Length: 194
Image (spheres, rainbow, N blue to C red):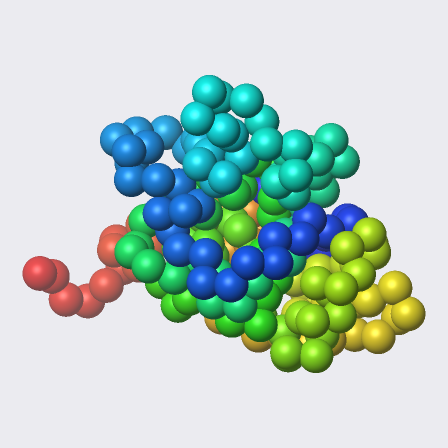
């Protein structure tokens, strides 16, 4: 995972409500435990036709989408079954933040555990972002705000431990390993024994 303090990027707009995790990564791709390369399966049934050709009108197939780090999605993004493969695929594709007015709880938690920043904004801001596809915005994880081109800062919430991990570029195991010497010292010096 990379450290993320701020992301500044033009957005990719996916103005579809109720996108579920099976649409993000179909179940037939859940056989892998590898994060690398799974981005090729991201929205595969929407990105490609039955012959394997890219569908030019799909937003993630636009040439400029390859360099963009922020996806603005429709309401209720990531609903459906729990699968870490969904945020893995989004992250592996190169996207580092997803913004919506509503993000499913399990998807949000899986995203936070895997370095993808889920950002929930108010309905008015969400609609403005959907209606202005070529704007450059900043997602500031440190300040917990989205900054619009006019300088307006829109606050968002993120669980403090997950925020710490994203700012440090570590997952939960990485956090424990960062504290390994303290853990060893505690184990050595504790007064009680199991």
